[in-house]
Image (tube, one colour):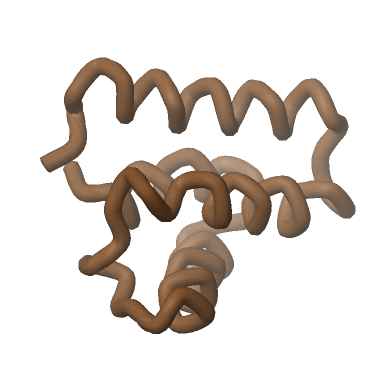
Length: 80
């Protein structure tokens, strides 16, 4: 699993596939990259975008759980 897939997977339950993918692509573009070029060094910006995207639709604890799930995916080495 690549970074963009992990982020999309963390977001999908809250905002759906299309919005999740749009968030990842928009973040990548803002960093001058494509979604598939995102790497672990981009995680602080991705986490910031996740927090901003979910803030209107999810409680802070839910947002934190999504971030923790994303970090856990990355720490377990599930990323390629």
